[in-house]
Image 1 (cartoon, rainbow, N blue to C red):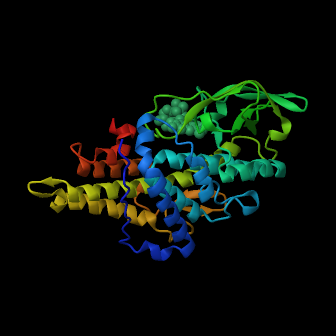
Image 2 (image 1 turned 60 degrees about the vertical axis):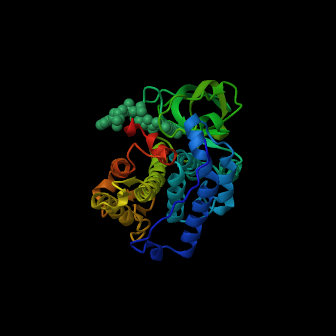
Image 3 (image 1 turned 90 degrees about the horizontal axis):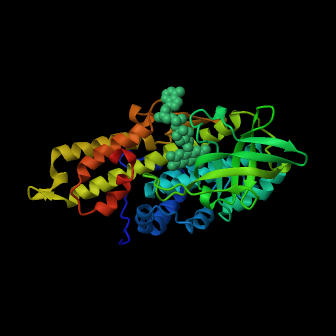
Length: 371
Ligand SMILES: Cc1cc2nc3c(=O)[nH]c(=O)nc-3n(C[C@H](O)[C@H](O)[C@H](O)COP(=O)(O)OP(=O)(O)OC[C@H]3O[C@@H](n4cnc5c(N)ncnc54)[C@H](O)[C@@H]3O)c2cc1C
């Protein structure tokens, strides 16, 4: 497959750049340039083959995309949440699977180690995860317990200086390549506990999940625990119960919402470009009013969502530990997923199926609602 040249341009019709700090713009532009140079040219090929570009893990670490809000003393960037959001926006602008890899590492692995872990756990794991030397994964979902994780069967039993872990997790992002897994399991009292399981512990395996129709360039797998001996020092001392994993998911959703914005920006850019190139009735289709209306509708949805004029971040306000969807935003955006879908459909009607630039828009064809 020919490498794609990424010609993405981001219009700023609402002069939103004026609302960002110089540091925010520098961070956004650095990640945007990285995506253009290192992700866009290769990602269609990886997505096509459903392969994970493992080499980007170190690159993302060097760029500071793993745990940017984690304090610098643990290898993080010590940045604010808008910086984190802008990074996720730019990564997902390139590919949803790449953003997913970074979100899992930052929000689902590094966040709980920092928030719930001991000082020793923070020191041992966070710098390696921040630098990309190690990849981590987050094990909550089980074959029979997805939306309702409180029913989980994975369990730990006390065995002196260690616990014995049994059970299985599935649909776990990064699992096949992860050196460490943050795992949620019930103890003998029935309390949900978090613990760090390391690759190489006897009885721990991570079989790859095949046949995914979306996020194809992100690696997904199972976590299987067969009488795994985990030292007690690997258990998080500072959290018990479902609030542990749910706190992580709240953090992840913040980045996912910014990612949806990045995907929308790329949909718009692709549709605009195609509308200028595609000739029908002897003129570019972008010359027809109906196409122009569709593009303008896209801008009307995207631009307000980009505005950081709320407390922190236009997409979500971030108060204390709880990200909240910004209720001033258009309903389509609050719905998150359906926003992406609507915009995607809108842009797709411009791209149509009969396009020479099929490779360029193929990433959208990976999405299940296109099937
Ligand atoms: C690509 C990918 C990566 C993932 N990565 C991870 C990961 O890294 N770590 C991890 O732990 N998990 C991960 N997951 C799992 C994901 O979080 C679960 O799929 C999710 O929790 C839903 O669980 P389920 O698939 O079992 O759906 P189910 O719980 O079986 O739900 C099926 C449908 O029923 C609906 N539903 C369920 N309960 C209700 C209700 N009370 N009211 C109304 N509707 C309801 C759901 O919304 C859904 O539409 C991943 C999944 C995918 C596809």
